[in-house]
Length: 213
Image (tube, rainbow, N blue to C red; front, side, top):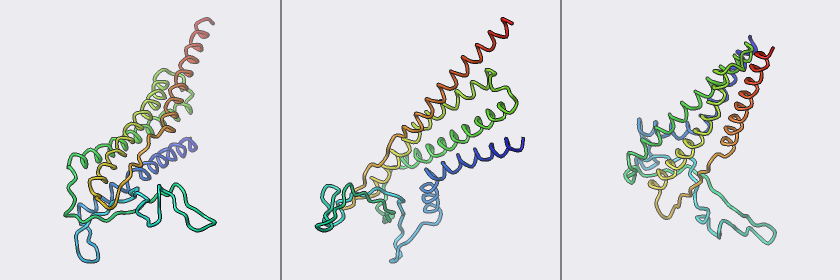
Protein backbone atom coordinates (compact mmCIF):
# COMPACT_ATOMS: atom_id res chain seq x y z
CA UNK A 1 0.00 0.00 0.00
CA UNK A 2 2.87 2.37 0.75
CA UNK A 3 4.23 1.96 -2.79
CA UNK A 4 0.80 2.73 -4.20
CA UNK A 5 0.62 5.98 -2.20
CA UNK A 6 4.09 7.00 -3.32
CA UNK A 7 3.14 6.33 -6.93
CA UNK A 8 -0.02 8.40 -6.55
CA UNK A 9 1.92 11.32 -5.05
CA UNK A 10 4.43 11.07 -7.93
CA UNK A 11 1.56 11.36 -10.44
CA UNK A 12 0.36 14.61 -8.86
CA UNK A 13 3.90 16.00 -8.78
CA UNK A 14 4.50 15.22 -12.47
CA UNK A 15 1.23 16.82 -13.62
CA UNK A 16 1.80 19.86 -11.41
CA UNK A 17 5.28 20.27 -12.91
CA UNK A 18 3.78 20.03 -16.42
CA UNK A 19 1.32 22.82 -15.63
CA UNK A 20 3.90 25.12 -14.08
CA UNK A 21 6.27 24.54 -16.98
CA UNK A 22 3.68 25.44 -19.64
CA UNK A 23 1.38 28.12 -18.27
CA UNK A 24 2.23 29.32 -14.81
CA UNK A 25 5.16 31.70 -15.63
CA UNK A 26 3.10 33.91 -17.93
CA UNK A 27 0.10 33.83 -15.61
CA UNK A 28 2.27 34.80 -12.64
CA UNK A 29 3.93 37.64 -14.56
CA UNK A 30 0.57 39.02 -15.63
CA UNK A 31 -0.80 38.78 -12.10
CA UNK A 32 2.20 40.61 -10.63
CA UNK A 33 1.97 43.35 -13.26
CA UNK A 34 -1.70 43.87 -12.52
CA UNK A 35 -1.13 44.02 -8.75
CA UNK A 36 1.96 46.18 -8.41
CA UNK A 37 2.95 47.18 -11.94
CA UNK A 38 6.60 47.52 -12.92
CA UNK A 39 8.85 50.41 -13.84
CA UNK A 40 11.97 50.80 -15.93
CA UNK A 41 15.06 52.83 -15.05
CA UNK A 42 13.34 56.11 -16.01
CA UNK A 43 10.32 55.43 -13.81
CA UNK A 44 7.93 54.65 -16.68
CA UNK A 45 5.30 52.04 -15.86
CA UNK A 46 5.90 48.96 -18.01
CA UNK A 47 4.73 45.40 -18.50
CA UNK A 48 7.00 42.44 -19.20
CA UNK A 49 6.08 39.96 -21.91
CA UNK A 50 7.99 36.75 -21.07
CA UNK A 51 9.49 34.36 -23.62
CA UNK A 52 8.44 36.15 -26.81
CA UNK A 53 9.68 34.70 -30.12
CA UNK A 54 11.32 37.64 -31.95
CA UNK A 55 12.05 37.95 -35.67
CA UNK A 56 15.82 37.19 -35.98
CA UNK A 57 16.17 39.71 -38.82
CA UNK A 58 16.43 42.37 -36.09
CA UNK A 59 20.04 41.21 -35.61
CA UNK A 60 22.33 43.25 -37.89
CA UNK A 61 23.76 41.09 -40.69
CA UNK A 62 20.99 38.49 -40.54
CA UNK A 63 19.28 37.44 -43.77
CA UNK A 64 16.40 34.98 -43.88
CA UNK A 65 17.25 33.69 -40.38
CA UNK A 66 20.89 33.06 -41.44
CA UNK A 67 24.08 34.97 -40.67
CA UNK A 68 27.64 34.60 -41.94
CA UNK A 69 29.97 34.87 -38.92
CA UNK A 70 33.22 34.58 -40.87
CA UNK A 71 34.72 32.51 -43.69
CA UNK A 72 34.60 29.38 -41.54
CA UNK A 73 31.24 29.59 -39.78
CA UNK A 74 27.67 30.61 -40.47
CA UNK A 75 24.52 30.53 -38.36
CA UNK A 76 21.33 29.05 -39.79
CA UNK A 77 17.70 28.97 -38.64
CA UNK A 78 18.34 31.61 -35.98
CA UNK A 79 15.65 31.97 -33.33
CA UNK A 80 15.38 34.56 -30.56
CA UNK A 81 13.39 34.25 -27.34
CA UNK A 82 13.38 37.34 -25.16
CA UNK A 83 11.48 39.01 -22.34
CA UNK A 84 10.06 42.17 -23.91
CA UNK A 85 9.39 45.21 -21.70
CA UNK A 86 6.51 47.29 -23.06
CA UNK A 87 5.49 50.82 -22.08
CA UNK A 88 2.14 50.39 -20.32
CA UNK A 89 0.52 53.38 -22.03
CA UNK A 90 0.84 51.60 -25.39
CA UNK A 91 -0.97 48.49 -24.19
CA UNK A 92 -4.36 48.30 -25.91
CA UNK A 93 -5.03 44.58 -26.00
CA UNK A 94 -8.69 43.58 -25.94
CA UNK A 95 -9.82 42.52 -22.50
CA UNK A 96 -11.54 39.46 -23.96
CA UNK A 97 -8.18 38.10 -25.13
CA UNK A 98 -6.77 38.34 -21.62
CA UNK A 99 -9.95 36.77 -20.23
CA UNK A 100 -9.75 33.94 -22.79
CA UNK A 101 -6.11 33.31 -21.91
CA UNK A 102 -6.89 33.09 -18.19
CA UNK A 103 -9.91 30.85 -18.79
CA UNK A 104 -7.90 28.47 -20.99
CA UNK A 105 -5.16 28.39 -18.35
CA UNK A 106 -7.55 27.28 -15.64
CA UNK A 107 -9.34 24.86 -17.98
CA UNK A 108 -5.97 23.30 -18.81
CA UNK A 109 -5.12 23.06 -15.12
CA UNK A 110 -8.50 21.45 -14.38
CA UNK A 111 -7.97 18.88 -17.14
CA UNK A 112 -4.51 17.97 -15.86
CA UNK A 113 -5.82 17.72 -12.29
CA UNK A 114 -8.66 15.47 -13.48
CA UNK A 115 -6.27 13.22 -15.40
CA UNK A 116 -3.99 12.91 -12.37
CA UNK A 117 -6.98 12.09 -10.13
CA UNK A 118 -8.32 9.44 -12.51
CA UNK A 119 -4.88 7.88 -12.96
CA UNK A 120 -4.58 7.54 -9.19
CA UNK A 121 -7.98 5.83 -9.04
CA UNK A 122 -6.83 3.44 -11.77
CA UNK A 123 -3.62 2.74 -9.85
CA UNK A 124 -5.69 1.89 -6.76
CA UNK A 125 -7.97 -0.38 -8.80
CA UNK A 126 -4.89 -2.26 -10.02
CA UNK A 127 -3.82 -2.67 -6.39
CA UNK A 128 -7.28 -4.03 -5.55
CA UNK A 129 -7.29 -6.35 -8.58
CA UNK A 130 -10.46 -4.80 -10.00
CA UNK A 131 -8.96 -3.09 -13.06
CA UNK A 132 -11.14 -5.09 -15.49
CA UNK A 133 -14.40 -3.81 -14.01
CA UNK A 134 -16.40 -1.71 -16.47
CA UNK A 135 -16.26 1.46 -14.36
CA UNK A 136 -12.47 1.32 -14.21
CA UNK A 137 -12.20 0.67 -17.95
CA UNK A 138 -14.34 3.76 -18.48
CA UNK A 139 -11.84 5.71 -16.36
CA UNK A 140 -9.00 4.68 -18.67
CA UNK A 141 -11.06 5.74 -21.68
CA UNK A 142 -11.76 9.08 -20.00
CA UNK A 143 -8.03 9.66 -19.54
CA UNK A 144 -7.50 9.28 -23.29
CA UNK A 145 -10.33 11.68 -24.10
CA UNK A 146 -9.07 14.26 -21.60
CA UNK A 147 -5.57 14.09 -23.08
CA UNK A 148 -7.00 14.83 -26.52
CA UNK A 149 -9.08 17.72 -25.16
CA UNK A 150 -5.99 19.07 -23.40
CA UNK A 151 -4.10 19.31 -26.70
CA UNK A 152 -6.90 21.48 -28.10
CA UNK A 153 -7.00 23.71 -25.01
CA UNK A 154 -3.22 24.03 -24.97
CA UNK A 155 -3.12 25.03 -28.64
CA UNK A 156 -5.89 27.56 -28.05
CA UNK A 157 -3.91 29.03 -25.15
CA UNK A 158 -0.80 29.33 -27.33
CA UNK A 159 -2.77 31.12 -30.03
CA UNK A 160 -4.31 33.51 -27.49
CA UNK A 161 -0.86 34.23 -26.05
CA UNK A 162 0.47 34.96 -29.54
CA UNK A 163 -2.28 37.45 -30.38
CA UNK A 164 -1.80 39.13 -27.00
CA UNK A 165 1.93 39.45 -27.73
CA UNK A 166 1.21 40.68 -31.24
CA UNK A 167 -1.05 43.42 -29.94
CA UNK A 168 1.55 44.53 -27.39
CA UNK A 169 4.60 44.63 -29.65
CA UNK A 170 4.85 46.98 -32.61
CA UNK A 171 7.40 47.80 -35.32
CA UNK A 172 10.37 47.56 -35.55
CA UNK A 173 10.07 44.50 -33.26
CA UNK A 174 8.21 41.65 -34.96
CA UNK A 175 6.66 38.84 -32.94
CA UNK A 176 6.56 35.36 -34.45
CA UNK A 177 3.87 32.75 -34.00
CA UNK A 178 5.77 29.94 -32.25
CA UNK A 179 2.65 28.02 -31.22
CA UNK A 180 2.57 24.34 -32.14
CA UNK A 181 -0.02 21.61 -31.73
CA UNK A 182 1.16 18.98 -29.25
CA UNK A 183 0.93 15.85 -31.39
CA UNK A 184 2.88 13.81 -28.82
CA UNK A 185 0.14 14.23 -26.22
CA UNK A 186 -2.47 13.58 -28.93
CA UNK A 187 -0.78 10.29 -29.81
CA UNK A 188 -0.64 9.36 -26.11
CA UNK A 189 -4.37 10.05 -25.84
CA UNK A 190 -5.11 7.85 -28.85
CA UNK A 191 -2.93 5.07 -27.47
CA UNK A 192 -4.76 5.23 -24.14
CA UNK A 193 -8.08 4.89 -25.98
CA UNK A 194 -6.70 1.86 -27.82
CA UNK A 195 -5.54 0.31 -24.55
CA UNK A 196 -8.94 0.98 -22.99
CA UNK A 197 -10.67 -0.76 -25.89
CA UNK A 198 -8.27 -3.71 -25.64
CA UNK A 199 -8.95 -4.00 -21.91
CA UNK A 200 -12.68 -3.86 -22.62
CA UNK A 201 -12.41 -6.74 -25.10
CA UNK A 202 -10.33 -8.70 -22.59
CA UNK A 203 -12.90 -8.13 -19.86
CA UNK A 204 -15.70 -9.33 -22.14
CA UNK A 205 -13.78 -12.50 -23.02
CA UNK A 206 -13.15 -13.09 -19.33
CA UNK A 207 -16.86 -12.74 -18.54
CA UNK A 208 -17.79 -15.13 -21.37
CA UNK A 209 -15.31 -17.72 -20.09
CA UNK A 210 -16.70 -17.45 -16.58
CA UNK A 211 -20.25 -17.89 -17.85
CA UNK A 212 -19.16 -20.91 -19.90
CA UNK A 213 -17.57 -22.54 -16.88
